[in-house]
Every structure is written in C-alpha cells, then in structure tokens.
Amino acid sequence: MARKNGKIKVAIVGVGNCASSIIQGMTYYKGFTGGKERGGLMMGNIGGYNVRDIEVVAAFDVDKRKVGKTLRQACFAKPNCTPIYERNIPDGPIVQMGPILDGIGYVMKDYHEDNAFRASNKKPVDVAQVLKDTGTHMLINYLPVGSQLATEFYAQTCLDVGISFINCIPVFIASNPKWEQKFIDAGLPLIGDDMKSQFGASILSQMLQELAFARGHKVKCHIQRNVGGNTDFLNMIDMSRLKSKKISKENVIRSQHDIREVDPSESFLHAGPSEYISYYDDNKVANFRVEMEGFMGAPVILDAQLSVIDSPNSAGVVIDAIRYLKVAQEMGVIGALRGPSAFTQKTPPQQLMFSETLDECDALSNRKLTRFTKNQTKWYSSEDLYKICPSHNTKVD
Image (tube, rainbow, N blue to C red; front, top):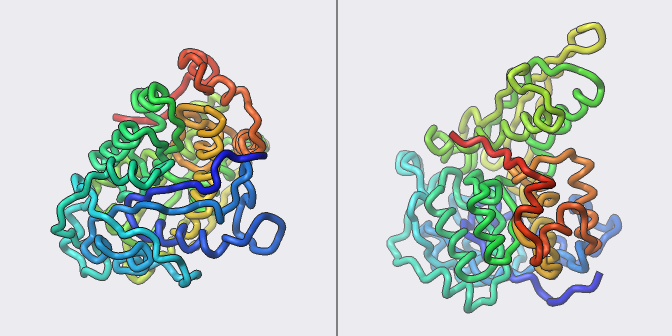
C-alpha cells in the first residue's frame, strides 16, 4: 500500500463545530496506526495513509471572531459549542476571509452572538491563489446548509485550481451529473454530498430500512425527527435553507426502496430537523418511529431515541473520506467516488447497500480497482460509467 506523498494537504471552508472536531481528532489520533489503542476511528490505515498524515494548510471563514486568527483559536471561538476532547492542537494556518455570498442566513441576526454568526467586514482573499500557494490537494466544504452560491463558488474554484472537493453539505455537487462531469473533464475525483455521520440518525435509519426489507417486512412509515442546539440547527430555522437538507435526509431512507425497486409511495417517509434549542449545544437527539407489517401482516412497531454529540460524529467519517480521496487521486480515479460517497454521505451519486460500500472502501484502501473505479480511471469514457451506474438519485425540484 505504498503512497506517493508524505502529507495530505487539506483546506477547510467553514471553521465551525465540524471543523473543530476533525482538527481535534487529527491530534487525538496522530499516533494511531490501527489495532485497539484508541477506539472511535473506523480505519487506522487507508492506502498507506494514517491520520497523522493529514495536514490543514488553509482555512476560510466569514465570522469576525475567526477571520485573522490561527486555526486553533478559531476552532475554540464562539459560536462553536462542540466539546473539547483535545485542546493541544497545532496553531495551524491563519483563517482567511472568504466571500460571504449566501453563507449567512437571515435568522442569525435575531440570536445572541454566542449562538450565531457575526460577519467580518474584511475583504475576501483570492481563494484560488491561497489554494495554489499552499499546495492544497483537496478542499472540505463545511459551509452552513443552504449555501448554494457559496458552495458552487468553492466547487468551481477547486476545478480552476485543479484540486479535489469533499462536499459535506446538501448542496448537490457530486450527485449532480453536470457538476460531476466538470470534475471528470478536469481529471479530478470528489466525494459528496452531505456527510452521513459515523453513528447518527441517517445511518441508523438506513440500517433499519435494510434490516426491515432483508427480514421480509413491509415498511408502512419511517419517521425521523431531530433536535439540536448548534448553529447548524439554528441555521435551519430558515425553511428556505432547510429544503435541501430534508431532501438529503429522506434520500437515505428512500434509497433502500429504490435499490430493491419498491415503490416509495407505499411508505410514509419523513426525516428532518424538527427544532432548535440552544441549551442542547452540540448534542443532537433523534427520535425514530418505524411501523412495519411482518408475517401475515402482523404489526411491528419500533420507537427509539438516539443521543449523540453531533460534530465528532461527523468528523469520524470525514477523517476517512480525506484519505479515500487522496488514494483515488494517486490511482488516477476521477469523478464522484461511488463507494466512499455512499459510505460517508447522505446523497451520493448512487446509493448502495451498506455491505457494498464496505467492499468498495476496502478495495480503495488496498489500492485495488472495482467494477466502479476501474471505469473511473483517467482513460475511461464517461459513458462507460453511466452504463454501470445510470441513476443519479438526487431528488431536486
């Protein structure tokens, strides 16, 4: 599992709770190479890369308490509220001002500054030039939900500079055929869209659906409701910004119908943020109601609750996505990575069974080509890819 470069150079846009958690995790797991020394990490080694091989070389934000500060200072600045598990992180680069565009929702002005964004009045830097100067390999998009224009700006900047993109929010890039084609034409891989946390509501809903179908049950309804107190939940008070998130979360549940060619209209499916309560901070509480019909139509009802710290839960998948993407770069794989996207994101270009995502990720981790990736190397025809995975399953109005 030889690798070509010593470090994976990463840029981050949006130094919020998720960024804080993944940066803490880079220090927390820097000595981890596998085994059972420290739990919570899915993969110690991916294609020759350990967590210690990841380096954040650039960061962008628009909040006045973060712009101009070291990355370390920004990670622990308000309105970030995720718990601190690793305080001794490196200073890192200076956080630079990015373009605001639609990155700040209108509701923020109505809430206390400890809980909401406050825009900096500094002039945006030349993002493309910063990425070039720092030798960045990929950019992670941690912008707030609903940042359509801002996400498209950073995605296009990645294309212009010639670097990869990890899209952790529900603005559809990897799952949009037109955007994916742009990355294919540029000879670049990407992962997206909308991160699916390590043990969160979405992966749990997915596994419940898989289990129900595998055991011969008809799913009458699947309801998932979420409450939280971080800026992600505050931002989604604005229903116009919430729309894409609801689509993305319901994609996870509906996908199990699509894979089995079961009509989704046979089930009542609902998923989405339900309420913002500042007291919760970075704690997210999800409630599930799944009603099924089993043998001879006998009713089966599951009511469950899941409580997690939201941001470390997301960091646990992105820390792997970074390394999968770097290995794909070195193997000459281009376009949206089917396996890692389905494993780490809610709305990938193609939904897969959980077991399939594990197989795809394991192969990439061992630098082996699969039925997907062998047709995504730089000499493939984009038509070949669509023959084996023709459906882009993003539901967009």
